[in-house]
Image (cartoon, rainbow, N blue to C red; front, side, top):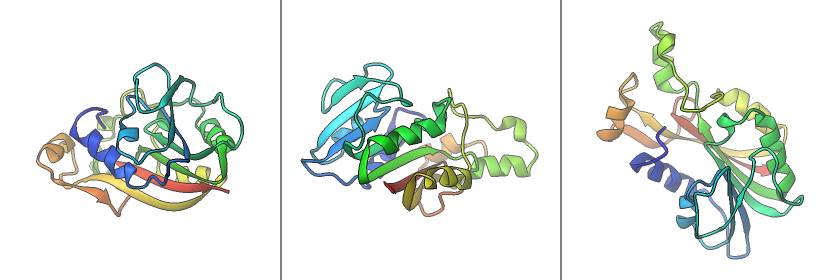
Length: 202
């Protein structure tokens, strides 16, 4: 999914509704890019990390790997990781680090691209697998069941939602976006373009 433009804004607003913070909450957004998610949410103690400096306000920003964080154990009330895990060589290490820095019962929200989205299902059904492509710089994309299995070894899953379910499912998702022929907050995460998983540290 494009990382700029209207769909990105809607995606971030979709996640912002799931954020639970107050003015005393310490929140880490891994791969925060320009910090837009912070602008859409209530005041908190906000810390953003990314591989290069893209953000200059609304948070304390640190250049950091997404697999090893420069933070003590059990310090954050909330960690968000949006469209990050699919880029990482060691995805489970990313989850372990998030678990390490979260406080007990801390909230974790993860969003990533669904390899089994409706568009890909149609392509596979029609024998057009050569037209299935991963997102730019994605090392992998996930099936919901495999990702939930990995997450559940460290966290207690509270909810799974989908975002962007095109109603024109094959080849023309950009047209579906332009014409607003899609379900934004989808109750069918297993066929949506991305899924958003909300969980707690065990």
